[in-house]
Length: 120
Image 1 (tube, rainbow, N blue to C red):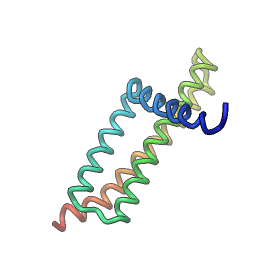
Image 2 (cartoon, rainbow, N blue to C red):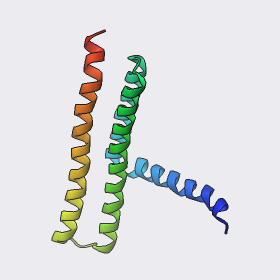
Image 3 (tube, rainbow, N blue to C red):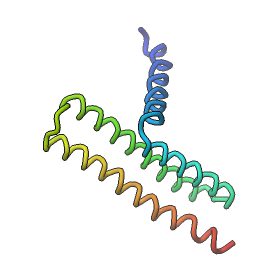
């Protein structure tokens, strides 16, 4: 198989991964809903290009970490079906990374949105 013909398959696998996360991960759905609301509000508030840049990078950061967390949890469950302290550490630390990203996103959101809302 040539590399060119494998590109559509790669996109299909990636989209399947997103569908799986949407279907199976409630936190992923919450992040997507919040992201959609933030994008709608940014459009309504006429964000400039740098505000859009910060917003989209922040949203991507949280979504990517949530996907990585989901991946890590699936791998840990596969290799360690029984509860083990090391498996718990891996899952907890991965979840902590998502939590820190989400909290950071809240602060960035406040920094971006509050001046626009209150200075209107």
